[in-house]
Every structure is written in structure tokens, then in C-alpha cells.
Image 1 (cartoon, rainbow, N blue to C red):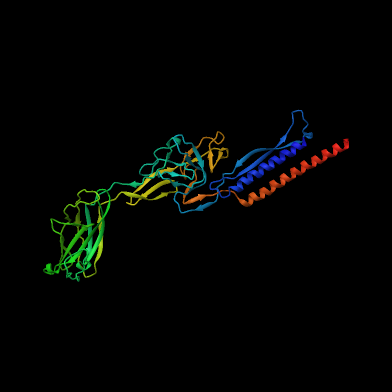
Image 2: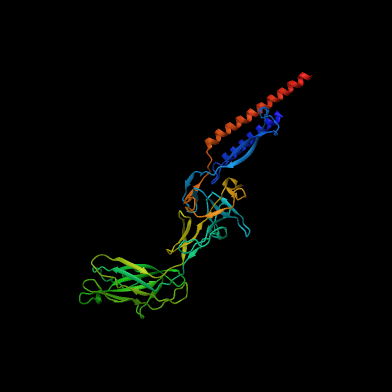
Length: 419
């Protein structure tokens, strides 16, 4: 019987070393939680046994207790690297119509080819849907959704008005050659403004300013402005240029109001477009040429330019046209008994009857931990502690092996007596 007692000691020591080795092997695994083996003694007795005469029958593994203490936190440059400081697990759903939900502390997420937020296994991050203000519109397990990032935002708006305030230097002289946009000596100054067609395609409007001293009168100064969109020249009532005049104090006299160009057709759309030009804030002073204000009312379709996740888990996408979209709030799961979760590998856990049903919530609410963006939670394994435990487990193994060897020698001695 003593052989089996020592054998059980060898087995539990080996189990202890296996658990420690598993911890050490995952010291660099993001979101990994270490385990600790706990054992119980074995006693064979009945209610008639004299408790003063009982001897133990060895040891047995009671349980491998998972340790859900927080791991080390590492700062990264990705907004989709998420970490929970405190209680809670990320919920992820495997691909497919019948995908299963798993739980993880590894918050390393990326955007896949279909613009869904997924982890390294391709499982979809689960979140609660939100309205335009970021308020949750559905809760609980039935409210969880995959998060997909829209590639674009907004509708294209064709430019119909451009407001341009410039200062034209009174000391400028009239060019000696006729205007030709290819000849920089034929104009005094030029400005470029980005405008948009009906499909949101960007175009460049270029305005060329030419001093026209021949039209000066009564202290007023005169200019001509030639306008082009790409290679198309814009006209005003058939005229190739807009005449601008300023009084002796440099205040604009003409045009006194916004001027509408004749319709033109951008090559990209083939749709006729009309633009109104407003120079009423322009002036003519002794200072050098400068652009003092410039606005236009067109807009392109916004292209995805960035993602952000705040401390409450609200995912927001930003776009090149300045718009933002709130896409969802990261869902966190918690359990009555986390140590009862079933480890599945890849830093995944599955719910069990021991752990209890998952309870869903959001960061920093109802006992859930805070969410940190640009941060990854590493393993909670302490190498020094595990190495010390490994030495102790090895000594336990050696001691039980020695006890087994001693028992073998005693048995051999008894056999020799009989012979």
C-alpha cells in the first residue's frame, strides 16, 4: 500500500510541475492567466476506524485554480489595442452563422478585409449598438453586434459658391504682355482653391490677378481676374474676366456682390455646374499680395481616416471630410465564478455551469473595469515566483521517488530473509 502512497505523491508533484511549466511557457502570451495546482490528502477510513490509528493513503489533485489577477500593461500605438483595468472579459464571436461566443482578456484587435473589428483568430469583437449620440440602443446577449467600419461617410456636395478675400498690392504694375496662364509674367498673382463636382471629386479652381492700370480713374485702381477650373476657363456673361476696382482707400467698388460664372461641365461627371464667386471682402493696400480668407461650400465623400476608443468603450470612426460616426460600445462580460471558466487555448475561455451565465455591461459601469485604448494586457505570470515553485515541486518529486526507492529496498530485504 505504501507503494501507491508514494506513487500518488509522484503524480501530484508531476502535475504541479506541469502546471508551472505551462505558466512559464506562456509568460509572453497576451491575456494569459496563470494556474495554481491545489491538492488534498487521501484517507481510507470507516466510522468504526480508530482515528488514532489511521494513516494516509497519499495525495490527489483537487483542482487547478486559475488566477485572474491583472497582467502587465504595455502601451502601443494602435487604438484597437484594448485592455481592461479591473474586472471583465472581451466577448468575441467566431465566424459563421452559428459562431460561438468566447471570452478573452487579449485585446489585440485589427480591422479585417471586410472592415470588421476582429482578433488574431478572426473572431469578431462584440459591442452594443449606439445611436448618433453614442447612447446604447440594445443591451444583453441579444443586443450584441459585430462592429463593421464604414469605408466612407456623408454625401457629396457640389461647390456652388466660393468666397475669396485677397489683398492686391496698390504698387503692382501692369504686365507688358497679354494674359496667358502659361506665362507667369502675364499676371501679377494667382490663387488655387479646391472645389468639388456633383460626385464629390476634387477640382482645382485657379484665379489669376492682372493689374489693369489703364482702367484706373479718380484714384481708383483696377484689376482683371481670370478663372479656370482645371483647363476650363470660366466666363461671366461671356466675358473672359471679372473686372475688380478699388477706391482710393482700398475698399472694393466692383463687383459689389457675388458674381455667377456661366455654367461649365466637369469632365469627370458630365453634369453642368454653376459657381458663384464672392470677392466682396477683398481690398487693395500697399502691403504685398495675400489671401485673407477662403471658403467654399462643397464637400467630398469622407474617406476613413482614423478610429478611436474612449474609456467607456465607445468606438468612433473619423473621416477625411471632418465627419465622425459612433459605431458601438465595446461589451464586457463578467461571471459569478470566473475560476469555473473552461480554458480553450488562444487566451479564450468558455462559460460553464460552474462559472455561471455571462453578465454583459460596459466599461467603468456596474463593477466592470475601465477600458484603456492603445494598451495590451500581457501574461500575469511572475517568472521568479514560478521558478521558485518549480524548484519546490521538483524536490517534492525527488522526495517521493526516494520514499518509493526506500520501500523497494525494504521489500527486497524481506524477500532475502525468506530465502
